[in-house]
Amino acid sequence: MPNDPKGRTQPGYRKHLFVCGHERPEGAARPSCGKRGSLALMQSIKRAAKEAGLTDVRVQKSGCLDFCEFGTTAVIYPEGVWYTLEGEDAVAAMVHHLQHGTGAEAHEMSMD
Ligand code: FES
Image 1 (cartoon, protein in one colour):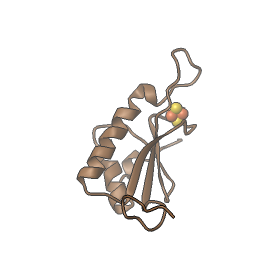
Image 2 (cartoon, rainbow, N blue to C red):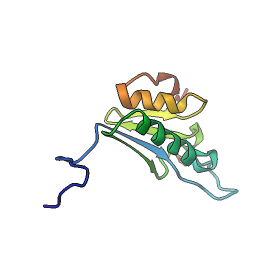
Image 3 (tube, rainbow, N blue to C red):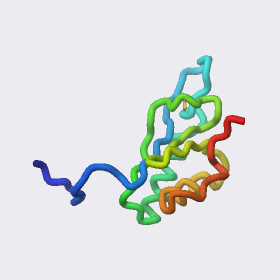
Image 4 (cartoon, protein in one colour):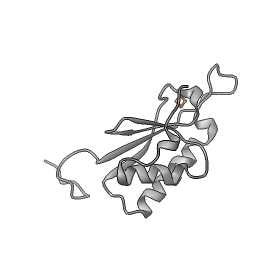
């Protein structure tokens, strides 16, 4: 069995944030998160999580999460809370959820 370079003894993360990084070409029938700057936002969240000392979470890009029309889409597991990342406090809100498991309700995806 290989040794884990980070010293982990079991697979997985306490929290796992996926940010959609999908980008469609100009003229596509549906919008895409990559065109909204989602990858730069993801990098900011990664940096902020690291600065906050969160070593047991993972922030990474995903392919299309299929809620393209609702804005820059993200989801945090294991809660399965879906977010639309907009506004200056979106980064801080995601880090807060990664730390505490809640507290980012203002960014939860709304389908109303
Ligand atoms: S392109 Fe981001 S959810 Fe579809």
